[in-house]
Amino acid sequence: MLRMLYLLNVSNPSRLSADSGYTFAELLAPALADVGAEVTVASPVAVSDPQVGFVPMTSPTTKYRARFEPGIDGLAGAIRETRPDVVVANQVEAAPAVRAALLEAGVDALVVGYCHYLPFSFTSGQQLVLDPAMDDGGLGRSVLLAFAAGLAACDRVLVHSGTAASWTSAAASRMGVDLAGKIRVVPAPRDERLVRDPADATVPDGQAVGVYNHRLYAHYGTAEFTALAGRLVSEAPVQLTVMDLFGQRSPERVRLDPSPERHRDELAALPGVSVVSDQGNRGRYRDVLAGAHFGIAPFRPGCPWSMSVVDLQGMGLPVIAPRIGWLAEHIDDELLFDSLGEAVEIAGRLATDAEFYQVQAKRAHASTTELAPSRVAACYLEALR
Image 1 (cartoon, rainbow, N blue to C red):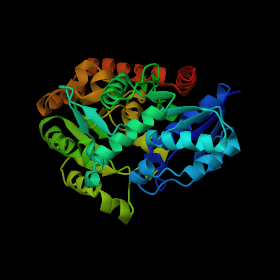
Image 2: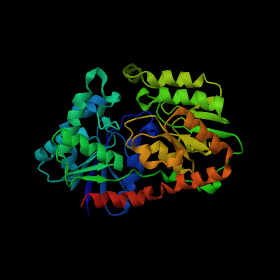
Image 3: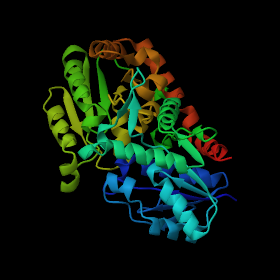
Image 4: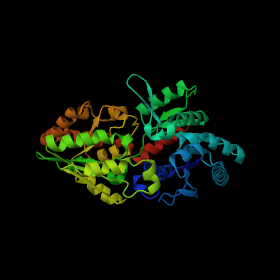
């Protein structure tokens, strides 16, 4: 039996429902156990399935400590306790520390990095652009170099999508890291609690409710979404529901990046826009999605994948999206836009053209079929061979 140590940094311990890395583990780890792996999650928080082992570890307190100070002592202790065949570093920058900890513990294991987050993206002209979310105080270049060092320390590099594979390979090549034979595309699993037959969705009858269920950070392109929101509610037969996924954040997190609170207040002031919270409850989250007719993707250039988009599609909701990054790879071409005017037209058509809506609802749902946790788990284990 394959013994896997799954290292998980939890960035939002006070609101686990808003932590995509934790949700990913909560869905994937039991599925891996179901297909024969012995999985132990090393994390501040255990996953709920009792067949998944747990080693408590303290997460670094900031996103930069997670990348520059992963804690070799804790890693070596977890490795000695579990004696794994495979160590999965979900923070790729931690992979060199994992390699060092394996040496200290005297354990020979495959080091796997899962690129949940890329600290860069590429323009259409193939210019590498640092992600502003990782560039506070000018640290973006250092994070990029740490990411490259992590890639170099991995035996396997797993990414969500073809877009992510292309970007990661290009960045590695520019920094002299050879990923030949290492990189694999393994998509994230959908949440089966958020799957609905598209036939059960309510077809709009001249009026539609759109939902935006993404984090309200500035680097998600929330200013661009706010501009679109104003036009949608004034120019199309559309009302909008915006989800406040974080609720009350700590003063420390607000001080590092106050943009979610600022954008939340701006959106709440728009007529025709409602800002709601699921209060960290997955059932309430599902109810909000079920009450909408379509979703809107984030305007985030460096988007290699979006769990929130998949949540919408699993519920049979068409998602309109800017033609950027992974969105251009994944979203149906008829729902992609290059301007806010085009976005308003598409939303209006979803609200008024029942046949178009039903076709798009079925396509959205079908795009998640291969993302069932059991299928993703099989793909994951295949990638480790």
